[in-house]
Image 1 (tube, chains in turn blue, purple):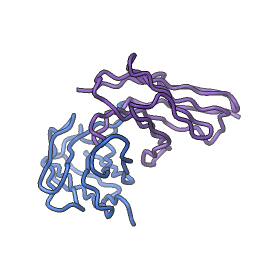
Image 2 (tube, each protein chain N blue to C red; image 1 turned 180 degrees about the vertical axis):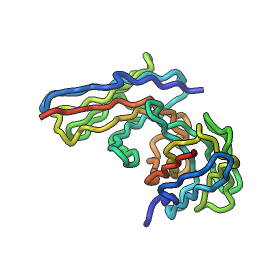
Image 3 (tube, one colour; image 1 turned 60 degrees about the vertical axis):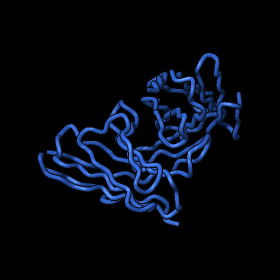
Length: 114
Length: 111
């Protein structure tokens, strides 16, 4: 099992450009989510999905879109990149919700918007 | 929504000493409390977790305690080693998959 795979690992964007961060998991997990991590802020939830075809907003959803067409994939789209979206992005997945289901993180994607 | 406060933000201890990191949460519905260790440039790694029906859990040199009444939980690391140096995050959730993180504690263990 590859676990949770994120691409790209590093990306530099110009303000106003769009891009998609890819996330895939091969553990047949129902639940997937995206977090961003900024210095001194911990990780904050952007969007999450409880299954194919179902997505919902987290704490900081503005400027991001997601879709979940398959169980395996959960891409995060930046529609018009802004410098405030410079951050490290982590995708995560877990089994069906319930107390104590281990949440697996991808290796992260470092995004810089100039 | 859930609000998780974590203290201290930085902690420096000598090798062999104990380290304690404390977190409070606001939502009484939260029922799962994991702790993550993150080294520079790496992903968060789960080190220990506790469920709301348990008051304490121990795994070798690390332990976590939970006080549901007071809505706080703590991470205890005994006999610290230089390789324990990292940023530690607490989190809370009532869903089991959408985590609310504290802002992290940077732990430095000096030889």
